[in-house]
Image 1 (tube, rainbow, N blue to C red):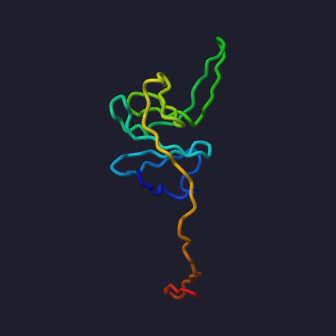
Image 2 (image 1 turned 90 degrees about the vertical axis):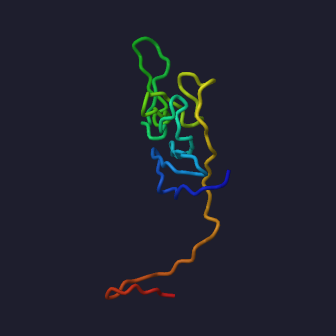
Image 3 (image 1 turned 45 degrees about the vertical axis):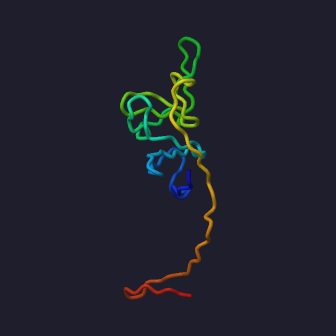
Amino acid sequence: MGKHVVGRVGELPPGSRRIVDAEGRSIGVFNVHGQYYALRNRCPHQAAPLCQGSIKGMTLPSRPGEYVWARDGEILRCPWHGWEFDLTNGRSIFNPHAVRVKTYQVTVEEPEEAVETFPVTVEDGLVILHV
């Protein structure tokens, strides 16, 4: 699989997502607390657009009468039937050993080519380049 530019770091702040088409696949790229993860935008249940679902947390096992909320912003819920997946590894919450969604590697890299810039001003409707 080749490299595909999703956007600049500033365009994908923590808690956000961007759905892109790459080599014929719809893939959701998520910024989870400053780390980037990518999942196939297809729920294994009935092929729903998974990455359009809500991003939540989950309750952890606890004592009776006690509710421990954790992993906020790390759980993706399918918009059709509510199946939940871990954004960090693509595994389902209800059966992590058998049900999962395809994940992809995401890296942050500096642009390969530096673009030379020049100051520009607008004077009486004319755009002027100053070299």
